[in-house]
Each structure stands twice: as C-alpha cells, then as structure tokens.
Length: 351
Length: 255
Image 1 (cartoon, rainbow over the protein chains, first blue to last red):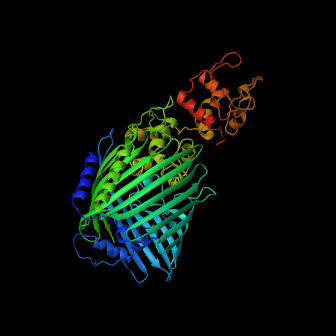
Image 2: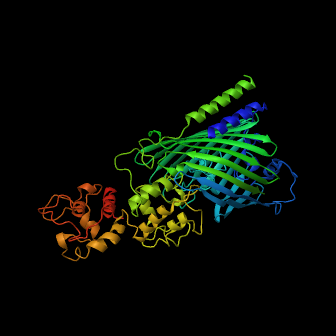
Image 3: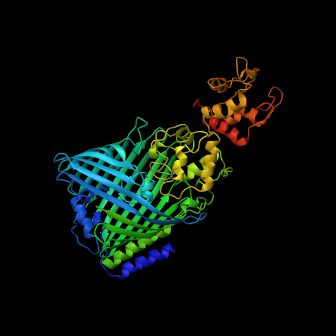
C-alpha cells in the first residue's frame, strides 16, 4: 500500500513538469540555522527574520502580524504549541486513539550586552520541565555558549521519533550540560561541544561527551558530517554521520546516513538511513515523504526496521500549521510494538 | 545532463532505496531481535527475569532511550544494569519517590511513569504504544512481591531473612554458615564449605559450580551433601532460585 502511494506521488511529481528543486525551509532560503532560530544549531525560539519567514509560508492572511513577541528592546518571548489527534495500531492490540498535547513551550531571550544573550526554553505541557537554558557570547564569526543545550549532531529534525534522532539519542528530549564553541564563516559552519554525556541527567562519571559538526552551506545545497564520542561506566558510544540537503526540482531533499558503535562487552554496530523529500505543491501546502531504515546490529540478519511517512502540511494563516499524515513502521514480527501504523492530525501554532 | 535525465536518476535512486531497505523477517531471532539460542522465550510473569526480557529490554532499553552511554534520566535498563538502577534508587524527576519501592507498587515511580500518572515528564515508553495492562500488572506484582532481583541486599531481604536465618544464625550456625545480614557475604562467596570438601559455597561468576545452588535445586545430593534446603521445605521455586543464580553469575557482588 505504501509503495503504491510512493509511486503515485513520484509519478505526480514527474508529470507536473515543474522544475523540481530545493531543501526544506532552512535550505530553501540557503541560510544557516541561526538565521531563523535563536539557537545557533536550530530549534526553539525564532529570530525576527524567522518570524517573518514563518508568516510568509501561509496560504492566505496578512504577512504582518499585529502580535509582537518583543517585550522590550532587549527581551523577547516566543512559543510553540503542537498537539492533535493520533490513532495507532499494532498487530496484537486494538487501535489506540488519543488527543495529545505533544509539546507546548515558552521561550525567553534577553540580550544582556551587545554580544551576550541569555535564553531559556521551558516546556509547559505535557509536563513542566526545562529543555534548554544557556548563555551565549557572540562575535561576528564565533560564538561560545554554556549551559544546557541541544547537542550539535546531524540534521536537527523536529520529529524526535525519527530513527536518526531516536536511536542516536540526540534529540529535543536530550539536551545536555556543557559548553559549545561555534564558528560560522563564509560557507562553513562548525560546532564543537563538550558536555556531560548524560542527556541532561546528573553527571555520574569522569568522562565527557564530545560532539563535532561541520557543514558546507551554499544557497542550493549543503553537505556536512558529525562525530560524537561518549563514554560511560558501562558503554562507550562512537557515532559518525554524513548528511546533505539540496534543492532539486523545487523540492527539498534531506539525507542522513549514520553509523553507531556501542561497546559494552562486545561491540554492536548500527546503521541508519534517513531520506526526506518535500514539495510545496501550491502556496501554503507542503507534501512530505520520509523513508527511514534502521539496522540495529549489522552482524545479525533479518532484524532491520523501516519507518515511512507521507505527510501533508497546510499553513492556512500566518503562524499556524495543520499536519496530517500516515506513518508505517515495520520491524520483526516478534516485536509487535515495532510494527505500528499511525494516522495523525496535528495543529502547530507558534509566535 | 538535462533535467529529465536527472529526474529519472533521482527517481530510480529513491526507488532502489525503498526496495532495498525492507524490514527484517525476524527469522532465527528471539523476541528482542537477538539470535535464538535454545532458551530464549521467557513467558510474562511477575519475576525480575521475565520483566527484564518482556518489558525492559524490548520497550525501554532501546538505543537512544534507557540504554547506551547517555541513558535518559541516567536510568540504564539494559540486562545486568536495570535492577541496580531501579530498586531503592530515588527517581530523578521526583526525588521523594524511589523508582522501585519493594512491596509498594503504588508508590514506585516506575509504575506511575508507565501508567501515565507521574506528576513530572511523559508517560513511558516515550513515543511508543503504552505497555499492555498485562505487562503493567506483571511489573506491579513483581514490585508488590518484594521486587526480588539479582543483588545481595534483595536476596538477603527476600530469601535469607525469610527462609534461612531461622536456622543459619548465631555463633554456632548449621554447617558453620551464618546467613544473617552483614554475615552472609563473607560466609558464602568464594568460601569452601565445611567438612574439608573441595566445593565452594558460591563461586563468583559461576552459579552452576556453586554448592549453594546444588543445595537449593537438589542437584546430586547424598553422602556428605545431604538435605535439600530450606530443610524440610517448602523449597524455593525455580524463579526464586534463578534470582540467586543471576546474582552469582553476575559476579556475586556485595551489593
């Protein structure tokens, strides 16, 4: 069934005879993450440019908002709400249908000095907890930040359940404490982070997590690579990836390939592949196709998992998005929870 | 290269990816995706081995969650690590509650997390279907029955104190074996049994070679190796003995 949808979609794109090209949002503009987000590595509060760009995505409505997120010249607020209806089904269980508030966050940024800023990202629902809190010192080419922040690694997807974010353990739920040095000059963007390696929990060992992300960015494509090393008392994890985003035929393509090595008594090698294609069908309507592959242990045959999604994203008015889609996850039959079909409709509003 | 050719190449590439990246059939694998090795299927029951095999390993200790070098909330739920990270350990999110409070499932933070009643954080497993009522009940029963697991303190509280120290106590215990708290480790682990026999009561790392296991399982007893324990019965069930086996196989630590 999914393949039929995939081929139909592909055929549709071929027959429309538009010039297919461009990666999604960040790559569509050719900008770095920090152009639209206060965090240099993306996610969370939007910059003023990010606010304006977000409003420009809408199918209709005024592109200028009466709402201002600025409390003063040096203090700004922001927020995100994501929630909706989800229906999921595994082979051995009945349908689970639920309304969910997936995430509601409030952001505050205070500019303490010309080059020094303070930032807090607080999740209010479904549970009240701090996601990130940091202080950043910025020069024209470099920045240094300290506190709790999202680790620089690979493509910063919003979907924490994507294999490349869930399996690597580097996602919006695992901000870590430490320091990060970044350099953005000409077409190069690089970040190096030294953190506890405990996903935000209390440090429990003498080792630290090292993360390095390097990308070459042009207006049409970007190519990057990340490495991550984290040693704990029980497991040593080495991760490496390459990722690319490109604009081809008015479509945005995202690809990431990861290799993970977990060494406990023995070494387990895992491999991950993520491919995403986005197409702005007409103004305010984005179609997203995602293909994911996960090999949990390359030494073991027939244990692979896949996860494929087809999502329609509609921006009816500025600062609001409706997402609806179908996701098909497949794994070995012995693990019914890995064989999941999901249909969802989400509302995303932000300021 | 013209645009049409490029389109075709990309389409072929994507199609090839889709076709080549199929999910595994699971042939020759157990319920956790590991190769079958004869005794892999452990039915769901209210004991530690079962909740590890049926709940913690498949639903919690997945890569990027409660496993690896940076487990969520510092809680490692992989085999060999979960018990010491759960039982009588205070939770990160609500420090007043232990993750597992032996004998009290209702006040165990683990139960609140899987039932979605915790005051902090999300219901677990995160971003996956909730545990079935049968699995949650198995967890509840395991905790309410004392949360027995492969640590000496757990074995001391739930087995030695309940079933052994009525005899193996005092200054002159039977067979010179004192199993009281604070004494059991030094009189068991890597200690030769009495009567000048070469056998070791607990061989750290090797349950099958440990005399204690022979006495509990009634293995080759006779001669000087008389009497299955606890003397006169009722004897320990195999699930309970397996907890002692696991503790020994994991090194018989004084934990």
